[in-house]
Picture 1 (cartoon, rainbow, N blue to C red):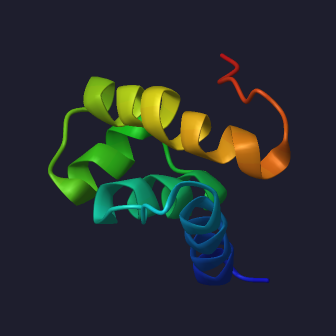
Picture 2 (picture 1 turned 180 degrees about the horizontal axis):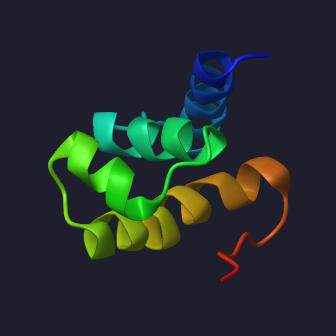
Length: 77
C-alpha cells in the first residue's frame, strides 16, 4: 500500500465511523507523516503554521481515527 492508498483508506474508515470526510489539510498531514516530513514542512506545503498542523493532527485526525483502530491514539514526542 502506498501513501495515497493509506490516506484514502483512512478517509474511508473515518467516513464509515463518523459520516465525515478528511479535508485536504488532514490528508496532507497523513501523507506527510507517512513520508517522514516534519510539521513545519507539512505546514509550509499546506500554507499552515507548524503549531496549527500539530494541533489538527492531535485534536482532529487522531480523535477521528481512534474509533477506527478501537484504540485511543496519542502523539508521542
